[in-house]
Length: 138
Image 1 (tube, rainbow, N blue to C red):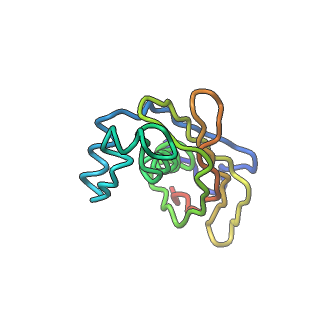
Image 2 (spheres, rainbow, N blue to C red; image 1 turned 90 degrees about the horizontal axis):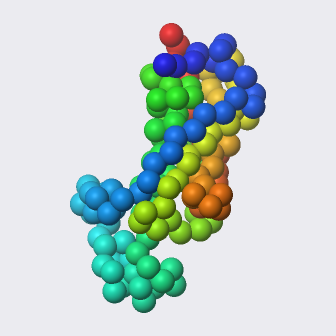
């Protein structure tokens, strides 16, 4: 499924929900090379300011890419940029909902700006930001 720029409206939203698992964190650490002990070592996580291991911020923010590439605008979308702020940690076992909302549409350039938010199962915002994307032409 996908939306062209002419099918999008300001205020339109879409989301994706996923529980962050141990396997997700270990796989991301391996793929990215980010072996920071706060992510992969139980003792280091416990002794950190977070009190437990936390998921990589970019692993969690990757859920925004899932929404853009599969839901809104959808298949064929080009993700051009992202500004974000990590506001709270995401722990292994947290269920994250990534949501995007169309804020601005530039028909001439075939570009959109979207508000991006990731919240945990308790409704706590863990990431907030703004993305820019190019919807598919067809």
